[in-house]
Image (tube, rainbow, N blue to C red):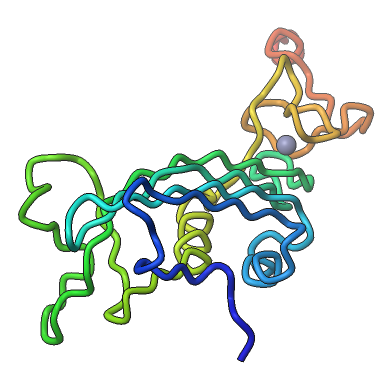
Length: 185
Ligand SMILES: [Zn+2]
């Protein structure tokens, strides 16, 4: 089995911590994120630092582009994800415990989320980043609107409408005044 550079051996992390960078140029990373990102570019920056004999701090960021369909106008656009990473890494809880994201006793009062590493002291950064991207990609994606146009979509946007072809005669509706005038006898 080939060594996966995204599977981090925590026993190799020095006291001062260690940083990792992966992009679409890394074949293993590209392959592991391909189902979400296709051939789009991404950048993973992660730092792991020991906090004590069993906990590590995981910080960094994930930037990734993916092809999405605009939920406003159904045009394809490139969705850009910028996600910060800030986690406390905890050992896998004993068999029988079911709460996957249970807090460690030390971080009960904080908003920090925790992530588990394996009993063999490895952490699968690829799986973690895959989850980060999947969780933070909106179900109904749409780029920001600039003026009357989706910033990433080629068509103009009329808020709340789904047909933007203004030249279609059937779309031209009479004004309320026209309607009233025609009702007068
Ligand atoms: Zn759009």
